[in-house]
Amino acid sequence: MTAVEINFDGLVGPTHNYAGLSVGNVASQANFGETAYPRAAALQGLAKMRAVMDLGLTQGFLPPPMRPAAGALRPFGFGGSNNEVLARAASEDLALFRAVCSASSMWRANAATVLAAPDTADGRVHLVTANLAGMLHRSFEGPETHDLLRRVFRDETRFAVHGPLPSARHFGDEGAANHMRLAHRHGAAGTNVFAHGELRGGAFPERQSRRASEAVARLAGLTDPLYALQNAKAVQAGAFHNDVVAVANENVLLTHPEAFEDAQGLYAALHGRLPNLHVVETQGVSLADAIASYLFNSQLVTLPDGAMALILPVEARENARVWAEVERIVAANNPISQAVVVDVRESMRNGGGPACLRLRVPVDDAAKAGIDPRFILDEARWDRLTRTVEAHWPEAIAPGDLTDPALWDQARAAHAALEQAIGA
Ligand code: SUG
Figure 1: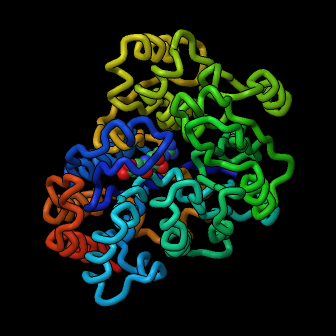
Figure 2: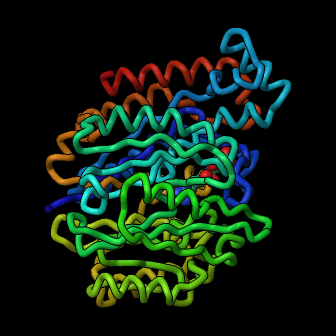
């Protein structure tokens, strides 16, 4: 089967802000209280989508849900009009109010785990919506993401879209950020690797539970997936998701040597299944450098000619040790032959790099035809989204601005304009 991978990027929502909501995410904590620039953030994301399109790849996008989410506050006893609900929550439980203002849906690598058709029991692409139970602000995303994924991946003969697992810490599921698929090529049967944490008592939470990953594998009917325990040292250094220390594409695994508790065991198991596997371990890049530069949060993509490109954040080029390593990797004898640098600084300041911003979905032609085309970009759609952002997204938001009803109105108008631009 011939298949390609489509990256669906999260469009940055109009309430993008720095409220320091994610413990264990070093950037989110460090930038708490800073002024955010939602319009610039969304335009940076769109420029990244454009850069991928310019490489000759198909690019999709996923719109943000409405924030602030007044409806999410009602179960907590806040009543009245939407503005009354928001105003009361802001004065009585500011942390909860900030949680429903977050634009965190932009990091669509956490939307769902995607299981490729050649690996699943029924031959459909399975998407298991993530419950994001580990972080309050992210836990609100699941039901809306589930609805959206059903809307986008609408052909049920090609796609099985599952709802989020029941939301409990014991079943914390962060989606594709902790999942890697290794295969000879996208259309061939592959090995699914689930990286997970464990309750080991560090200061930083381990968000992905193994039991959640096992449930995901069961739902899709995978045979014989691999489970790899994250290295506690990496998690405690700030690798709150595995995609901060490793990335895979087809037959290449690019990884920090300290990403996994038993890295040699994982490589051996993979080599046993995939004879042409390339394990590319970085040299001379500390965990601290990896986390500050987001080298591994690159998108590793297969180009139309079969070579691979690494789409890196600009922060990786600004770190001399990291950039020297990128140059070595590109020059070495492996399929990675090109480095493309993108600026997603606004997202990076909340701990989200190029790979966090996208959900990768492998499809053959028939499955591709089963996707609502309004979510696949062409020149005209990209222009329309860009113009909508330019016209409606706030220029700047400081955390104090979140309680201003004028901002809520602007967010509603932006949301309505976006739905119109999509052509709902
Ligand atoms: O869940 N940041 C996100 C970043 C997610 C990155 N995704 C991947 N690695 N795939 C998170 O920690 C910060 C929001 C704030 O602090 O306001 C935040 O949610």
